[in-house]
Image (cartoon, rainbow over all chains, first blue to last red; front, side, top):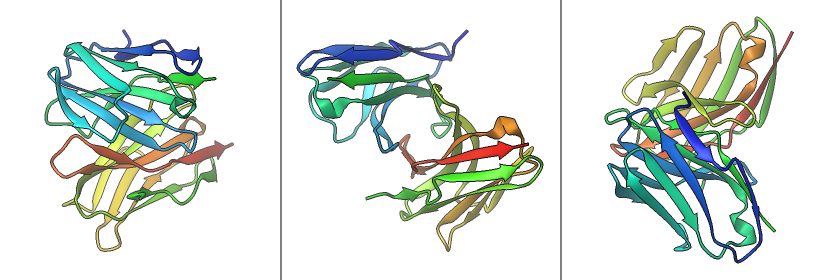
Length: 113
Length: 112
């Protein structure tokens, strides 16, 4: 009964490829997020969606595109992968009124070679 | 431009003693401050929060203190247990949004 799940857990791919990371939450939350943790351990928000609507879009290259088919899912598509995209990507969710209390998935470690 | 800073990358404490983790921030437009705990190969887990209008919040062994004039918060864990060994992230919420700004974390090790 995992609350926030991500697939895959590890992803190794070559530069120039297109890849997707999937995220699902079964908490009934309205808001979902994608974070990136880089090699220096900075955990930085990339996107947030509320009820399938984009709320936050930080300065992220256009190669990154979130897609939310329903409020329980928020997938991350990355086109033309670059070496600098190597990081751990975390999905998270929160309920309305308690946006500071976010529930994170286990992370997806992306390695671009 | 790091708005939330955790200047100590690691801390080692004996079991039963107090652990004090520190965090500084530079932006006054934060309305909540939080601590998250992270074990290896897992996502961060929410631990405790404090509103910017308060100066202390306590939950069991965990207490968070906020000093607004110094733009400083701290997490006290008493008594520390080996299971508390993890990376602790300080975070701040941008006023009235769902955007969190995280620090770089402090690795706490509690030894017997």
